[in-house]
Length: 177
Image 1 (cartoon, rainbow, N blue to C red):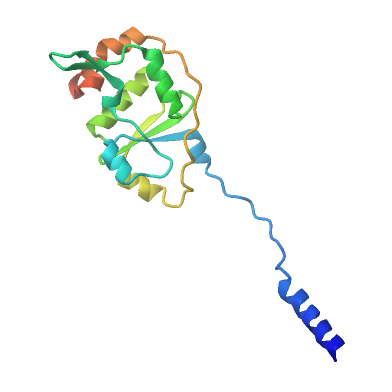
Image 2: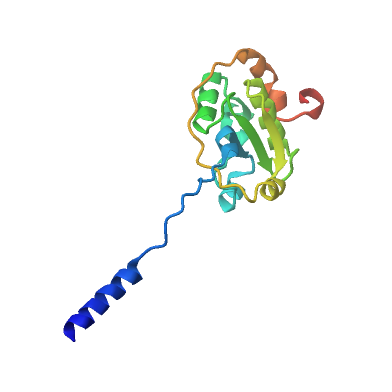
């Protein structure tokens, strides 16, 4: 009787512990995210409150330096190599597409970054309202953390600096579009 109970318990354990056959499924990857850097240009507080997973936050103010303490005049950092390095650390490169998101596609901050990135040879830049981006990409896997990109050489840094006051420090649709 004891042998029958042991065999019955052992048989039950074997049957109960069997797993269903493993099915191999192709892992879905987000190729879109590999070639795109999503840049949220809203103020840091809004970004910290909520943002699209995997996006990086850029604000033009953090790329300006104080030129004159009395007048509080700020200018784009004239060290273009440093600017490019900071952007590369956030995953931005001429090799990638950049999607600028903000509350409105044509926000002043998006326009400033679009202008600067174009001047720095990042040519594939688009501007999208954050809500539209979320609707269009609701089924995509969240973006991975932006990978650090290699630093690139700016062809005409002096040209960038000449127009930076009009097109990055301030914004002028008339002079920058």
